[in-house]
Length: 239
Image (cartoon, rainbow, N blue to C red; front, side, top):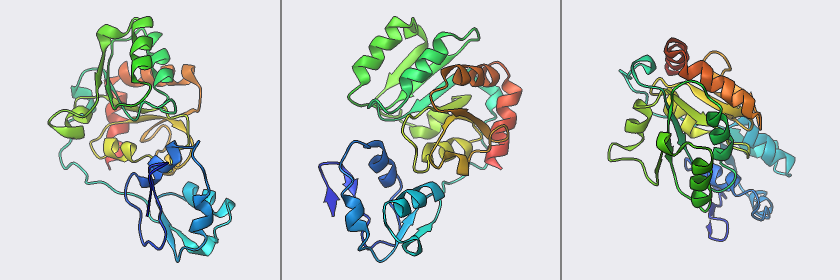
């Protein structure tokens, strides 16, 4: 069944999870959680991360009824090296207040290295984020796109040097990170939820404590100021 009030998919009596379903569920953290009661009647649940399994078990679902099967993406055979593109930063997400884009904008505002930011996504906080960009003096270095260009995410990821995931709500998995790594792009993310299950700090990307804007800024300087380092982390994630 579909819960239109929270835009969630009930995962009752299923053998798998539609990619993005749990992400949408988790991002709407303020919605009612009575769906946990319904899940207790499920034959079996398959979730994309150990983190999500732990959340379900903590809320009364039998551990024997929940299995973990991580998401996967198609890997680009010959990705464009991160070192060959300009210092572009990519953010993809729903602009709903839990996205952390305001943290990223504040981190970028203090940078001394060149950069350009692409924001792909839409949501109720879009206008507020546009005002923040103006206030921080980033308008000439920021582009907002409600949807990816004709070439899809492949195009914007290939044109970026780093993909940033500063979400303020724990990610059930963080599929966008895998999309980036499949194209040999390093990921800079807040540590939380299932992200650390696929992102190895210092090897395939950089993890920052949630809410640490200075940490985000240091990570951006490291990846934007050193194309070789960005390429090294991106290649490791691709492998």
